Length: 357
Ligand code: NAD
Ligand code: MN
Image 1 (cartoon, protein in one colour):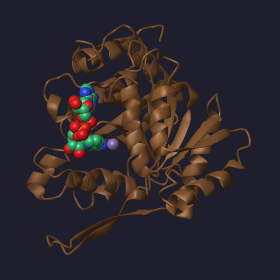
Image 2: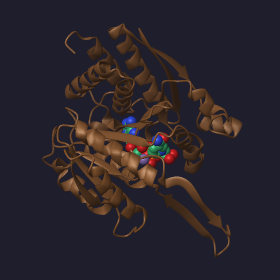
Image 3: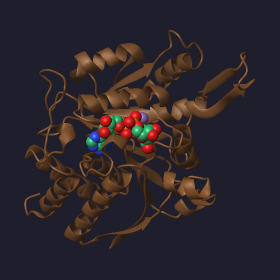
Image 4: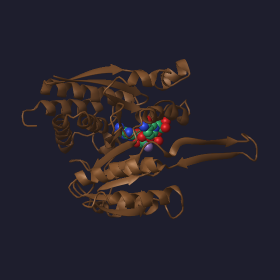
């Protein structure tokens, strides 16, 4: 029996709805496989916790999480707590504290789901965006001088280090090498940003030498939005900074049908710490409590978690089950269907238990 300790942090908004669905699906997979066991422990951290305790998680939160094999995370954000408090109070401390420097965001058009792009169907859009997850624009450096005064100045310092850029570039080239097309696009903004971004371009060229079998090119981030929209077939693996990839991956999710199907993995490739798996979307106040949150992103990221834990067969089975359900048109309203979160979840569980999956 292979056993895994998984910390669940559903947090805010639709987070608890999709993490409950994801946990049920993993439990059904465990029943089906019989040689894998998940030990879930739930943590009630998030905005409600903040309202009671003044912090998003306890001071020893990271020490607690460190003992787990993986973290399964919902979303943070509440209408009555500032977004920078929720983000910097929970999600970013975990990503940074555990040096989860590779944020991996696969996108493809699942069967049964329609892209808003004309004439683009399954197979035309199959990307993995690698987001640098430890530095850049979200490094947390900067500040405000003369607060509230007319001469007030606010700075956000984007920090890029040779070690940080080299390690994410190697990760992206290696990932590109493992995919059939062996194609990598390096996204920067080195026309306007002359220091960090020019460094990205230089390091990309240096690392490329180690991967002669990978074809790579460079794009400026603004032009990249155009290429993603007009020539989605021309892209495969993509690497970009923390901010650029944050934005591009929301676009990617929308082009694949909905943010509700877009997963993400925050990976510590050196496996010193637990990695964290979550849907890309936020807490979605507009649909919270309505029972219609799309759980597919949260299922897909569970498959990323299984892959990371070395359970590739379980991951593949889970994705086959998800694709069978979307292909059968059992979809939530964000992707044009009428099904509830519970109905999609039940259908995926049925598919997991069916004999031919
Ligand atoms: P959002 O992702 O919460 O929602 C954007 C839109 O997509 C909404 O219309 C929402 O209904 C829809 N949507 C998102 N997920 C869906 C799902 N699973 N099924 C169906 N529809 C879905 O982004 P937002 O509205 O900009 O932010 C809301 C809150 O979430 C804010 O507080 C923000 O800071 C936070 N946020 C958190 C994270 C995170 O925890 N990783 C990410 C993004 C935003
Ligand atoms: Mn985002």
